[in-house]
Length: 323
Image 1 (cartoon, rainbow, N blue to C red):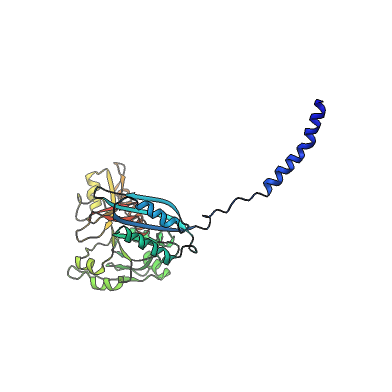
Image 2 (cartoon, rainbow, N blue to C red):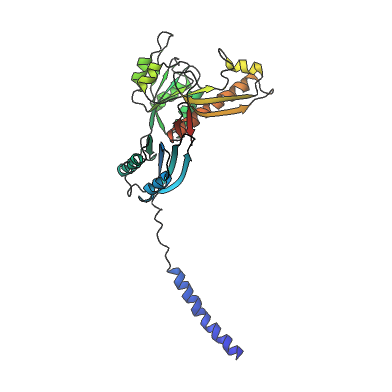
């Protein structure tokens, strides 16, 4: 009896296996609706705080088939709502014109002071002009960052109050890439600001890559757009000529760099990025200066990148929210 039962089970077992294999081989998982949502969008929002903003923001994106990757929110004591969102979407299902309209409705709903959307793959790169003086380190770093695609900008021109010779590294680079170089000799009584304004009128923002001239309030008002500056972190302790030498002789242990927006008050605009590094008794003046200049380059590049990625929002006049 036992052998007969075992034989019946063995004979029936291949049929069970065969049924199982056929069932698995014909199974199809449902299509993933998010597989076509691969285009990145960025949205920044500033409005009075109230309940339900994030929910409505999520709904605005979800009903169009988009998927939120991350949301950064900051609500300070003054009850202002600051937000930056990254999401992916299908441009066919959600055309750009409709996207702008949807976010505009959201901004009206919450009386927003700022609502900006950017699609890096489709939107034009930011057009910038770079102003520089004699020192090359920040200017050269920006040019190579642009060439390598590390910055989502188009450098339209370089303006300087220093006359660089035709065979210098900077001039050869600019000529090779078709970027104009404008030498404008400045004087204490003539900063050539009207000429600079004419050259930069079609830019989205300006970058001062160690431009050793103070821009007047009249220039800032007439330009009317953001200007990003960089300076070493040896101020205000070491003013005047050769601050690196002064700091080195004083035996400082920390050096740094600050990137900020330009205002009428010298080097006192809202801060975008700051970096520091330790120095020691083992540093000589050359290594001390190299570390300081490297910080300036890194700090300026990161500030520009953060700005282009809509990570920087003004906050309380003299501060910034940097997501």
